[in-house]
Length: 108
Image (cartoon, rainbow, N blue to C red; front, top):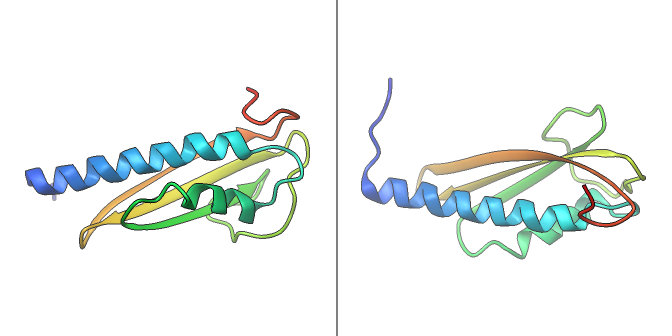
């Protein structure tokens, strides 16, 4: 069943999406060798203005939504970041992106 969203709900979703996108941009800058998944999470959280954020990471062949840890990234690691934000009572935004840990932060 498709539920038509109100203008207020659409605003919640739009705001959550903007915050999640900003977090992914910030995290991309931090993905580099010797950084831990926990440090990536901390980098994302400073961009949260409201709502309830959650972020998880997975390395290489791990399944998305892994547990954050102190394992350091190595050069060439494939890092998947998954971010979820809740606005209001039930408006959710969830997205993920995969990055490559290069020598220079943000290098594509």
